[in-house]
Amino acid sequence: MVPDNLAKRTTTGLMLVFIIAASIMASPFSFILLILTINVLSLQEFYCLFFSSILQPRKTGGILLSASIFITTILFISGINDWSILLINIPLIFALFISELYLKADNAFHNLAFTFLGIICITIPLCFFTSITFLPIGQGIYHYQLALGYFFILWINDSVAFFTGKYFGRHRLFERISPGKSWEGSLGGALTALLGVYLFSLLFTIIDLANWLIIAVIIVVTGTFGDLIKSLRKRSLHVKDSGNILPGHGGMLDRFDTMLGSAPFVFCYLILVHYA
Image (tube, rainbow, N blue to C red; front, top):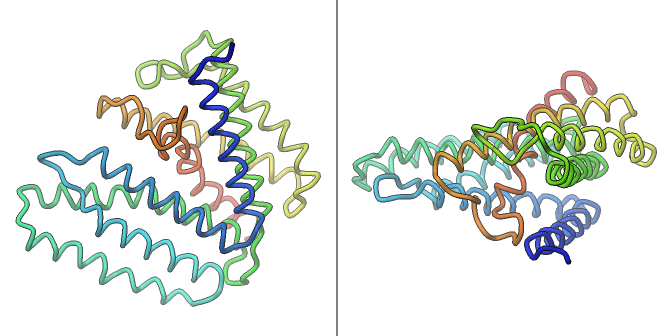
């Protein structure tokens, strides 16, 4: 008999695969809407995690600034506007500081620090991830294969690592931070992801096999650290999950932590090496 939590995890995972894959392949607009939704829900979750009687991240202002940064970045990277569109965000940033003058909070700069920290940890990586699909910059061409291939690597690595670690894990990867993660699970996920890359590189020919393999290694390594950082955050807050919006998985931050940790590095690799 399948454990109830495992059944929930599998069902939720399959639904996410369908929604994400369909959004990516349908059009650039549905893809951007998908990532914007992930951004807003994740940021809301982040602010709720840290909200307390002595710390109040500015949720409304932070989410509005986050959405502006995301949208203006896409307008620039897709070639709809030039880089000057990003300047819109400067008065919005300044407005958050001005607002603290009137809110009379005891810990004004702590509130601002965590407001901006959420944007740094969530919105900026998602801007990098979305921008990957519009490289080279400014040409306005949407490459859905890059986003879909990226998610396939994430899904394969995370899924196999989970089951391999669950049934064969013996040696802890980073016991102080995440006692459930093992070297066996991590290596199983990584090797399966590399095998999967070889198979779908035959279909996603926008970049060659060598680049796909390098991207997979970047995602596995940096994504694993992203996952550990998420565990560190939860441990510091004494919570099991970041949220409960995804049955069997926890919150948005629990599900997309690997992508948030790896996206900036994949973007840098493509800019500096492939599209240089």
